[in-house]
Image (cartoon, rainbow, N blue to C red; front, side, top):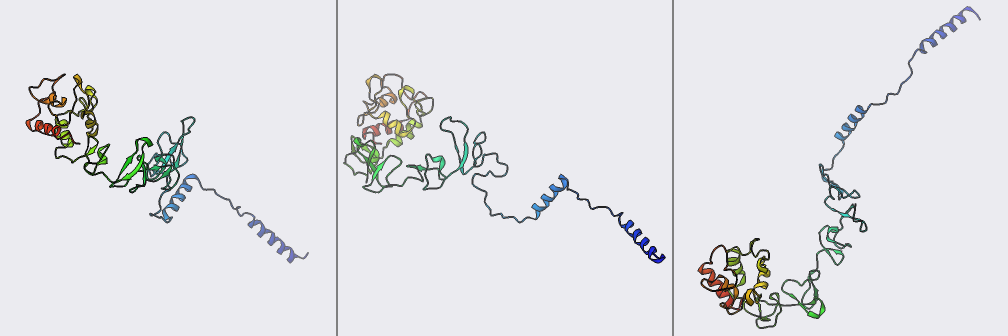
Length: 291
């Protein structure tokens, strides 16, 4: 090899030696803090949909209720879900989505509307005149009542309310709302509703410590309960609490009227009735004790 070619080869070798000092490429993995910042940045720029609804049974922010497929205990199921408990152990349970009207159900808690009729979600459909009726599940429409045959275990047919003088078994049978001695009669201006509110409630007879419970084996917690217990109901000393048409023979009158002997204690215990209250009570009994 001549001298010039040797010098060129040495120069090339020297250049290769310098490039060999280049550092290799190293891959750096981001740490946890960097990754969290990246996620936050992505969320900040991600498009939002304010109209998007949360799935049924998904708790709102801050809620601790249980969503679909989660255990019911201890926080209970979220809105739109209900708890299914093991019928054999009566323990545990998971949340399931409620169903819409028209779908099968075994109880009102399964239905979005909260009504389960004849194992189908939805409120009961009322029945018109002449159609069969049965209890709360198959009621009559407004303007009709269920005329029940005593031999059919509560089943009957929807009929219009009865007129004055027609036979009845209950107040709902009559257009006047007043059934007396198994016949519809006129609703008197002196109704038991007035007696109940202006005398019994006003005098404290319906309070919890008195006949609001069953003191003296007489409960008057509601208008209907009080009416059924008073009219022709037996009281102390074989007396009749309210004898329709005969105030002086009615035990309730003897209990409250001044200067009249009666079995047991005089009523009310916290003071005598006013003259207006006494007149109302006597007029109501004399009119036949209408409802």
